[in-house]
Image 1 (cartoon, one colour):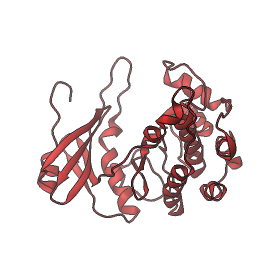
Image 2: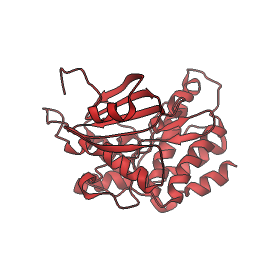
Image 3: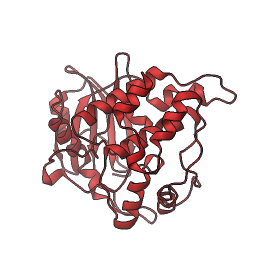
Amino acid sequence: MSGTPPELPIVVLDALMPKAQRLVVNRRGSMVWEVESHRGQYAVKVGYPIEATADWPAQPWTALAPAREGAVLHRLGLDDFAYGEWELGTWNFQPWHEGPDLYELWKPCREPDSRTEPHTSAVLGCVEALAELHDKGWAHGDVQPAHFIIGPDRTHLIDLALARGGRVPEGYDFPFRGCLVHYEAPEIARSVLATGEAQPTQEADIYALGASLLISATGWRAVEYPDDAPRPEQRQAVASGKRRPVKVHGELGELIDAMLSPAPEDRPTIYEVGKALS
């Protein structure tokens, strides 16, 4: 892919016939476009395999991620999406959701000497979006601030390629090898370190939501480790269960602290989180 200006696959162009398109992301085996079509606004995701480099192992699964997400969307009973294959991997398109993500929304809270407090309404929106997924028996597996889009009418939880909870076609499936370490629960980190794989759970989603709220409100990760530490070293820090104190005021701080409990069984469910907030 390097050195070649990225283009949408022909099959996607034929399906959407874009009036306008904007490349939003092009990194590590994944491209995302915002596409304006006669059908509406869409997010188009295109995957391709990552080849091995001196500091990054090969990751063929990235080519399958868009189709796997499409299969998950199908299992969840959603509509107005499509997915399929192209010459280097797979693709999907789904409705584009307008709005800031959680981290962007709470930027004023992180300014030096800020007196701006996180809005409970934003937290409730994130909780409702995750509860909708959990209620259908699924775990997201990759909860992070960038995956909560705070829209004008509701909050959308996006990027479901790693979700687990129902059957996915074998040709598009791949093992879960952890997520962004900042939001990885200790038990997930321990499993990935021990076996190279893990099983996403709703309890791990709760930890990830707590870590997402914490970093969005304060700028601090739940667990301390050097920014440039190798991934296994970061995971080792998370796996230890030791973390920073939660410096968020009031009931929200207490709730985040409970969500970040090192033992999965000690964390509240998403419904208990919602009840505490309301």
